[in-house]
Amino acid sequence: MNNKNLYSLFESRFPANRTDIAFEGPEIPTYSFQDVTDGAARMAHLLSSSGATPGDRVAVQVGKTVEAVILYLACLRAGLVYLPLNTAYKSAEIEYFITDAEPAVVVCDPASFSEISEIASKAGVKSVFTLDNDGKGSLMDASAEHSTEFSTVERAGDDLAAILYTSGTTGRSKGAMLTQDNLASNAKTLQSYWQFQPGDVLLHALPIFHVHGLFVALHCAFLSGAKVIYLKKFDPAQVLANLPKSTVFMGVPTFYVRLLNEAGFTRDACRNMRLFTAGSAPLLAETFNAFRDRTGHVILERYGMTEAGMITSNPYDGERKAGTVGFPLDNDVRIVDDAGNKVKDGDIGILEIKGPNVFKGYWRMPEKTAAEFRADGYFITGDMTQKGEDGYYRIVGRSKDLIISGGYNVYPKEIESFIDEMPGIEESAVVGRPHPDFGEAVVAFVVPDGSIRTLSDQDVIAYVKEKLANFKVPKEVYIVEDLPRNTMGKVQKNQLRDRAAAI
Image 1 (cartoon, rainbow, N blue to C red):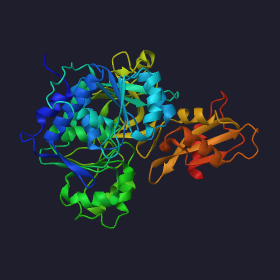
Image 2: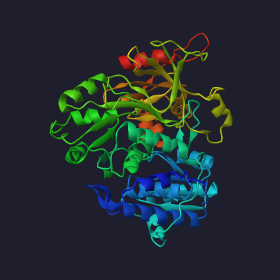
Image 3: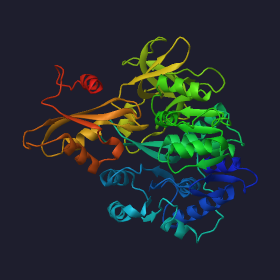
Image 4: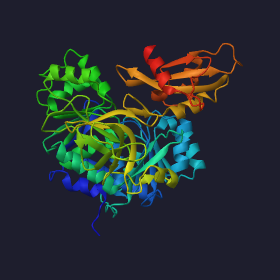
């Protein structure tokens, strides 16, 4: 059998000299490629000895450390399915993910160990380890005792490598199942298309619990044996200090807005850079143009989603156009109307895709999976798209009721379900409004039931803040007498969006 384990692909591309630097940064020790492979072997032994067998899930909610990246590689190496969780998720969210995915092992921050252990115990999890923001914890202590020799587990291309949860419009999160081949094909496509080379240095400021920071950025570095300058978080001063030592930077639009506010962000600071990419949210033409004028570099905007990785990209060699996401990558794409009929170029429709990067389906949701695929295998993205006369694709809106705030997906129904449970609330509607920094801000319109006289917007915000991750918490709440509806009784969210934008 030709081993399709993604880890084997990465290791085959690591430098022959394993003492070469793999990770360095202002707040971390330096790690060689040998340190990475040795660490992955030790952790793979630990996970296997803890009762996890190939195909089992490992749920991980930890801060951004190199050890967390090594844990991901260890899961691949042991044939386990990596399940990263946003560090902002609260216990109610974590309980759902652990109950649904039934992981064999959970790794969490020591501060949440007690709470998560209780949830894990009820779900039948075999082992819970800790990993703190300094890369220390019971995971490291226990793995240190194990050997640095580990035979990478054989995997088929269709075997799962990761499950990433993406919130559903119905409020119930869906686990997108990504195979070894899904991730390998997309990584190889991006490495080639964006011309990653062994001498590249990736300046990494993204979180590593979702596709952009983990799969897009790090996979490109792994496949080219490139060094990563690893920042614990996005900090404009640290980015500026490390840009002269870097060649590639990947960010969300918010990063670029904030960099442009820094006086030190100049052409000279970017003198060794060859590529800036933007994704996870729309990049305003204003930001695109200001960046070009300031630095002489043109941001490469691309488009992707959890279920498929990167789908389109502006060209590496060629014109990059503001407001566009370029051309299809390793996908067959089509734009269709509501009935599934292809629309002519220039018309707006729903983008559908098919290719080796497209996920296997939703974890334990066969009906939902079937509903989101056409009979001929095309996945319905739900993104309203237009192919221009110039051949460039433009994402013009979303048919799914989705808000993208600071690069994170926010589904209104999930927030509404929590607000509607609050005492004193009759119903709610959540929409997005344009925001200069986050792209979109979450805004809630709330109808009280009259049982609480003093209900305020801050009461609602505080209530939601206890239940959900901060990026889902409404920036503004408006107490209203009723919600606008059409003749069928459906809430007219377009009117609420207009109202929110006007306010």
